[in-house]
Length: 98
Image (cartoon, rainbow, N blue to C red; front, side, top):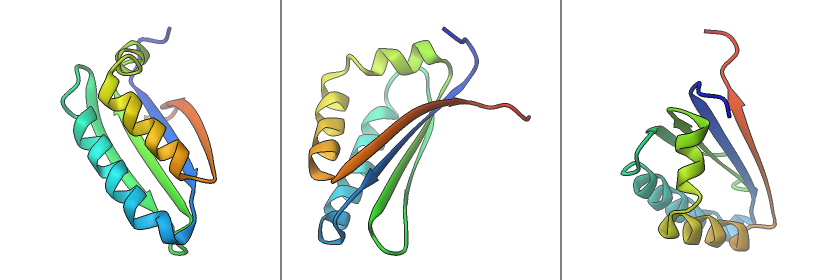
């Protein structure tokens, strides 16, 4: 496991009529995550067409991010977002250029 800071990127493809409710749920999820050890920051982005939602969260390490996967609140929130979307993509990133 890489001890360097890590960024989690989760992209959801959503129906425009579900966009507002999923933005609200994503924002709640970011607030919930902010109380967890190793959390650095989170941002929620949406595209102009209201068909894509991106949650980018930064963590002190991959270990810190991994611990969140066992958090029941975060698990429910991510499940809600996945079930409310048409598709989702997820990837962990490490910063390459300072």
